[in-house]
Length: 375
Ligand code: TTP
Ligand code: MG
Image (cartoon, rainbow, N blue to C red; front, top):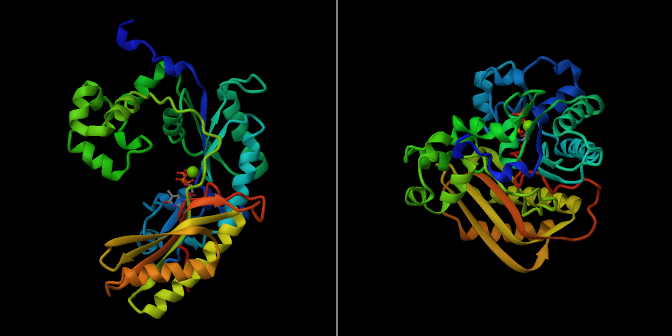
């Protein structure tokens, strides 16, 4: 064995499962409406709207439909698709049920969103192998919830998350410590959680496209090339990630946004939308038991340029009157007369008020729910 083949000591410390549900929103809808089985289903805005696709069933994906795509585009690709509005309350409930199943196997659970979580199973009450636990969870989710999920089993969060995507749907991919290097070698850097389209482009301009491209640089050379990100990239590209499971993720913001059917610069229309967004935001705050000190308005204009403006108050707030009043103030301050395509309001600098209204925690719902229709 050459020095290069020695397994990094951090890879011998943990056993992590990343579990991610398959076509989550769509499969819940199909489960609840058996007539949809086998048909292309798209959850998101309506086909004529300019809302976006939250998710598409695997049948719809065959036509090229993807999350975050404009619904009108999805409709052109797959006119026979069934378009459904998202039902976030239902998805939150299912998410809680999945989490309850995880807790049968470990207490160390870090939810990432409604449909995915990291589980640390290094030591588990039943003394089972990590792969066995992944199988049992997959089976229990299938039998009790009639839904499928996929798992990645690996020595850390980074590799487990990439692995869970390899054999979707209903697959399990196991990467042992000695397989990490080989698994990472040809992997596009974009697959690393934390490298988005902008970083991907920037790295590609330095001729860094797959993990192995990074390996030929010393840390010092990489620093010259990519700056502050160097040490993170140096480790991640080698499959090294020493982060522990964080069981107390604190929600940072809570928000609502909507894309208009028709662009508008009519202040009455825009104010009306802010009122409705504020009402919806108030409901989310009360369900989750949150109040926030900073209110942020997001505006996307007809030319797709975007601005965000924030206001921080001395007191936490969560009621619709105050939210819409401050949002309107921010809108007036940022008014440039251009037609608006999207408005969003979010609250941050959150604190927990009291017990949430229901046992459902909205902690891991996306910060901004996907567009919902404003009729
Ligand atoms: P994902 O796990 O990314 O996607 P998925 O579960 O639909 O499909 P798969 O994992 O099999 O590839 O996201 C989970 C849910 O989050 C998804 O069902 C809908 C929602 N979502 C959005 O609302 N907008 C988005 O852009 C994405 C990616 C997901
Ligand atoms: Mg998923």
